[in-house]
Length: 300
Image (cartoon, rainbow, N blue to C red; front, side, top):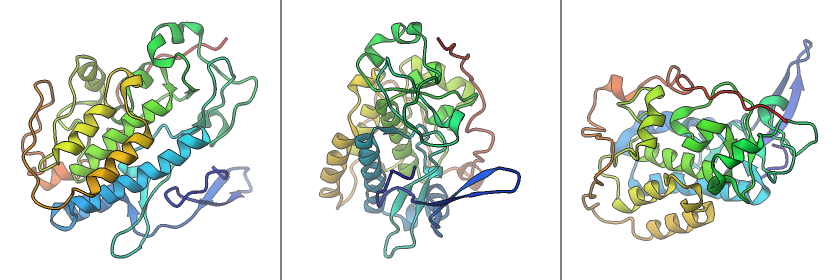
C-alpha cells in the first residue's frame, strides 16, 4: 500500500503495533465518510448526474494508476470509497486495500493480502492455482496477469463470476466490480441485485441476466455498465478506456436525460428509487459476504 501514491487513493500514513503484536495501518482521515453513506443520505434531490460522473471519474483515475502499477484491488464498492471535505464537491478516494494484491504471470508464485495482511508483491513459496484452474477457463486467464486470494468469503454481489468460482482475480475482474460501483452510484446507494439473495446471484449471472437500468440513469452510462459485465473478461473495457468514456460523457452531461431502452434479458427493477426508506437503507452486514463460498483451490 505504501508504494501507491495517487490523489484518488487513500494514503498510508504509518503503521502501529499493539503490545500484543497486532499491527494497524494508519491512513489519512477523510471526514466526509464513505461514498455509500453520502449517496444514501443525500439522494437524487441533492446529487446531480454531473456529481455522479465526477465521483466515477475520481475512482477510475485511481484504478488506472493501480493497474499501471500492477495491482488488483479485489474489493471495489461504494462502501470502500471515501470522500474529502473539498468544496463544492468532495473528491473520491478508493480505500480498503485489505484484499488487494500484486498481479503476476501464471507461472509465477503469488502472494495475497489474505495471507500476509496487506498489499504485497510476488514472493516464492506462496499459494498458486492448479493447472486445472487455468484449463477450465483458458479464454479468461491465458496470457493475463492474475492473483489468487486465499480467503474464505468474498463480496459476491460485487465480484466477477469467474472470480467467485475460482478466487482468481485480474484487472478485468476489477472492471466488473467497477461496473457494480457505477450501478450503486446511479441508484443512489441501493444494494446491488436488490431482489436476489446472495446465493442466487451467481446462477442469475450465469443464465445471462444482468441488473436493470437505475431510474433516470443515462443510456450511455448503463451501456458502459453492461460492457463491464461481459461474461468473457477479454471483452470488457480497460480502465483507460472507461476513463475516456467518462470524459466523453462529462462533456455531454447537460440537459434532460432521455429514457433508456431496456434490454430483453435483465433483472426487473421497477420503482428502483421509489422504495421505502427501509429499502433504501438496506443493511450491508448480512449481504456482503454471505452465500456462495467457493471450494478451496489446492496448491501445487
